[in-house]
Length: 148
Image 1 (cartoon, helix red, strand yellow):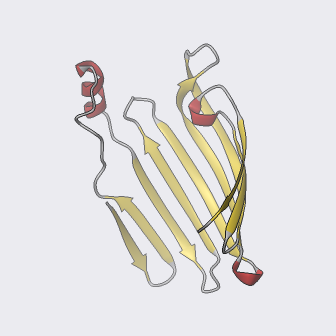
Image 2 (image 1 turned 180 degrees about the vertical axis):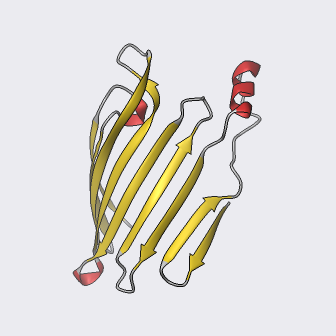
Image 3 (image 1 turned 30 degrees about the vertical axis):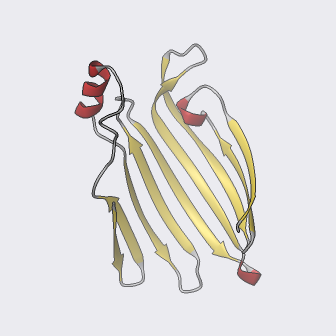
């Protein structure tokens, strides 16, 4: 469950009040104990929305269930365009323990960027994600979709 706190039209802030993990998932006891002793995933965001619909926010996502110290920081801007469309820019910085090409642990500091265009019935997004999923590979993704 997320709680949002709205401040007089200028800023918002949200943080999780409960983190969920499946305690009944089959696993060995050592891995389960490690998960329970480390912090669960969490998100924190704060932003600003102008009366014209322009939105800026920062989102920090952290997941340390496997003692990797992984963090994502997103800086996002959304701008309304003519006809109800909007343009989105998302800058990403991330750090934490990942893997190299041989699967050995490696400290990762990388980033990415995505741009999106939304209309009422369809959307498109182009993203570049360096060290995708804290692994050794970079990714370029093109997403095109429709809303029903």
